[in-house]
Image (tube, rainbow, N blue to C red; front, side):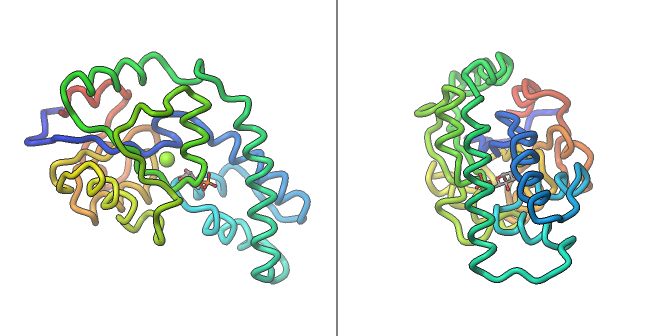
Length: 215
Ligand code: G6P
Ligand code: MG
């Protein structure tokens, strides 16, 4: 891995990059799917990575045996989020790994601007749970976008907020939709976890600390 030229900021996806909420999303959607008698498993859950709540529900409803009205969908999303938020209360600052915290501190010490670019509307709540509230320079999340990943909107807004051009930012992602969003927005990207294997991943990283070799 070699250093990228002229990187002035890093934009982090949240779920699957800074912290691990997959299991909680899975448990909450599973409870909803079971109640509705809809098949749902880990493979379907994998497709929800980086995708908005509304689009996640559409993916789950592909297995439904009847149509759902807009009102029913809104109600299901609300129920799912309530269950999910109850699970999030189990998250503690000790759920933030030392590797992630030390790497973020080192990036900050190097003078890089640090932002979040997440589809989640629970971003602020999650950051609070893991003790990172107030840490990032700016937060672009599911609350300030119309189009979710793979649309680049969330990252373009993040870059705008930290006053950098896309090509001056490195996006860190674990989802294919997120890597596509970074590429179509003109950002450099590093893929971690599942995203280390995607065709459009520019820099596959095995570990969070590897970001330090890229910037
Ligand atoms: C992240 C997760 C997705 C989730 C989305 C919306 O991108 O990877 O699985 O669907 O956020 O999350 P929310 O907290 O708004 O329901
Ligand atoms: Mg993610």
